[in-house]
Length: 106
View 1 (spheres, helix red, strand yellow):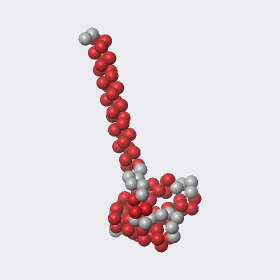
View 2 (view 1 turned 120 degrees about the vertical axis):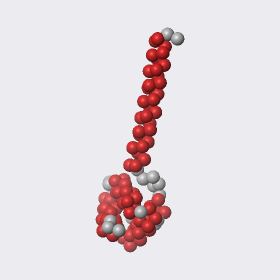
View 3 (view 1 turned 135 degrees about the horizontal axis):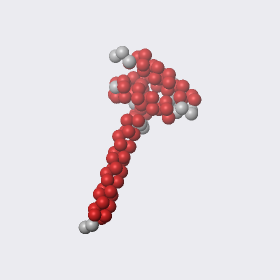
View 4 (view 1 turned 180 degrees about the horizontal axis):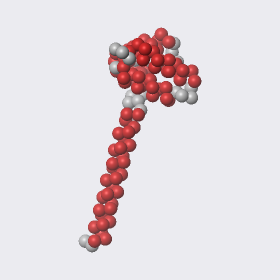
């Protein structure tokens, strides 16, 4: 094997390693930035277009099931997803305030 062939092989291996590292980094970054299960709030009965009483009942169930931090994260992500839908966006922001007022100290 000549020196040029060895260099070509090592460069190819380096490129492959860099690609795999980039793929791993991409998956790690996106896993924390998105909702893991999009319908998980719906399973607790939460829908932004419902009335305030139903939303708050569902939020209480979600906090009991997922915990305060994960519920706030999910509602925050839904807020971001609904930023162009003014009514849902406003309701989601109200629900974030409700969660902070009710559960933050507990």
